[in-house]
Image (cartoon, rainbow, N blue to C red):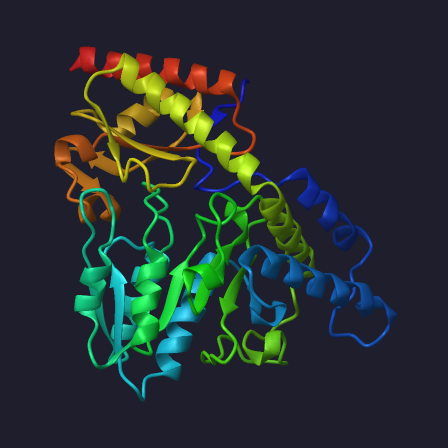
Length: 381
């Protein structure tokens, strides 16, 4: 059977062959514990520290500011819970947006049971946050601001540097979830001005189950996991050497090939977008038309249902829906709700995300399949 065209790179990415090659020795022969003092621990220890330098190289930080985690979700949990609990004597107020990934929103909600308060700042119809609105949300007891760098559903890129400057001026810690932006746009912690930044390996052509957290030197979030003291004692447990090596190599590749990859992502994204809007009526873009990730296009097909569209194209294209329709009810993603996208449009939203291995012939086939599916569904109404 012919494999579906993969247009869900924001969901996850395949392993880069260079990443697989870098990992192979630590799957096959270099099995030692990096904490061991004998010969078997030397190469794994060296590999972990080399990977730390590679991640730091992509982020523009010092290697000692990189902490390895099990993925973006853990990184977000550690950043937000760790800083909130470490700073609770100063205050218990957190500012975030209504637009965040559940790995931020759910963490903030969980902290509310510990006496913290969260202000969720609204975004506009293009998914953009106004720094002035963030400034307005800040209170004397605000200790942390957490705003994603780029949205996973619509790709809108937030003005993180401006928001971080507000935070710094008020002595507030600033965290950003950069899971979707790494490898697609420049991500430098000093240019952004953030104090903490989350990395997810599987969005970066590395394996699932590995990530990293940047913690600016001098900050001391509460420990995430207690034990034998690995990762400076903040995240105990024997290091996942195999996948740490994979993440390091993925970060090296992302930095090396950033411009070429971004140009390719955008060319494929725009080819898909233009192909669809030129052949179908009642299709609109969700998110900012310019300030968005080069690989992401969220399209709303008016008066169609996303799940039915996915059923029609499912054998030919892998994409994701922005809404679920069941009987007489429509469940919209919280992102589309935050943007106040009208239900007639939102219920027919599909997200397409391109990647390194997307080809022009695949895009052209995808356009033909989606056009045929949309026309068929409209004719059958």
